[in-house]
Image (cartoon, rainbow, N blue to C red; front, top):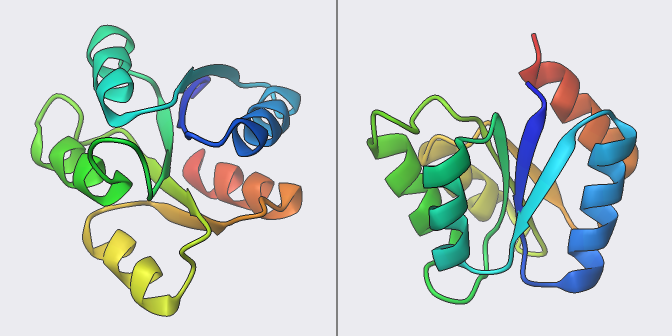
Amino acid sequence: MNTVLVVEDGLTDMEILSRYLQQAGYSVMSATSSEEAEVKIDKTKPDLIFLDVILPGKSGFEICRELKNNPHTSKIPVVFCSTKNSDVDKIWGNMLGAEGYLSKPINQEELILILKQLSK
């Protein structure tokens, strides 16, 4: 697992998450909208996707549901990264099939723990 797609419309959050992932040895692609994310997923089939919940176009929840319902993308792990960090949001993300949920601001140690869990 080495190619990660980060779908995030906030430039600061995108930069921080990308830097942490690169430091952990991942190749990072980025998208700032649901449309751009869909194009990159179709073209490159990333090994892992970090999804913001609130995005221009479709929400991260909608994108996750579509990915998990598509046999070509259903096995790609999805981790939500969001300021929406209530228990309800986390449960909803889990029900949609996401493998993890990180709260913003991103904590590098939490991120590393999730990456370790996903690489087992």
